[in-house]
Image 1 (cartoon, rainbow, N blue to C red):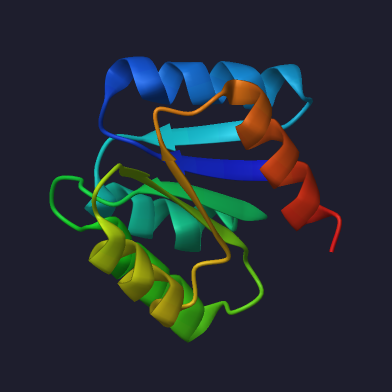
Image 2: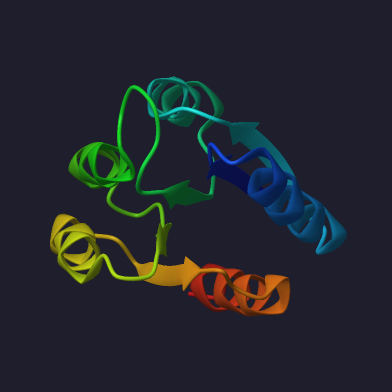
Length: 118
């Protein structure tokens, strides 16, 4: 399975990518929203994991764009604690799941498995 990880924090991005690779997934990474949008259309990932706050385009813009054009691609949104209104907006735009930072790599792995088993 090909997974796009859009996360601007280098340590978080690397941690997520390593866990997903360990689980047997092909991982594409980017640290900004504009490149994420380009990669979504060029690489056609099977699942997207995006942070909310990123340079050039937010995770909300990514969710909105993906769900407008490719409704079937599951999107997991990552966000820091205390952003309930942003999380609700992400779900209204079509996000499939939300994980609050910090989180366990095992939790992420289980949520990816749940979404890809559909």
